[in-house]
Image (cartoon, rainbow, N blue to C red; front, side):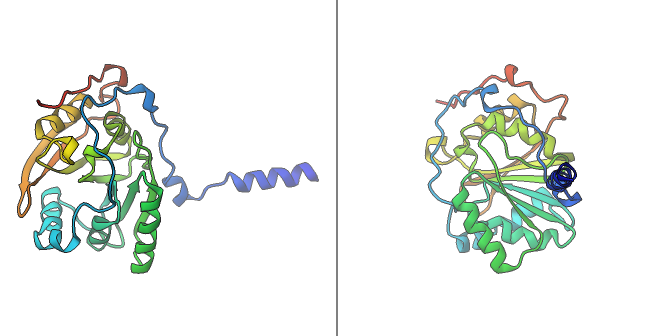
Length: 241
């Protein structure tokens, strides 16, 4: 009887609902597999890049939505979601049939974001704690991944880009917003960005300077899981002098 009860408890403990199963991340390659970036990595100093009203006034969200083709029903992963600037603006756009996955590596930022999402009653937002080399996103779940004003702060860019690929659906796009500045000054030179993504197998689709600020949106198509560059073959790119 005791053994039967224990078996039942263990079965219950390891039974995962369909919704929870969907959010089990794939097994990721460890950080030690990848080269470190051959350029400065900026420190994470704030959960928000700039005053939200100023960004709204510049029309930044509208430009990103248009250029990335974000529509109702899509799943958008916001990597480095911080205070949730894009989370709260994209949630109503993807609607009840869509989903926003808000990921960050700073637990304190995620706690504040959970409170914001709860206060606003956003039902289509899932908050995930990732790692610098692994966003820990569910396999085959994402239509669009965005990395906004945070790429220069990623300590393991090659690992992050490599481990992101299994989470992306066929024809998914990755949009990176950053400033025209060195990584040490919280930007990423476009040539460096292109080199680092190409090193993993990504292909640039478009590049647009965003109106109202000294920033850009670069959009990339990811390689397939099978065709991505293996970790041991990735060569770190040097920042332009």
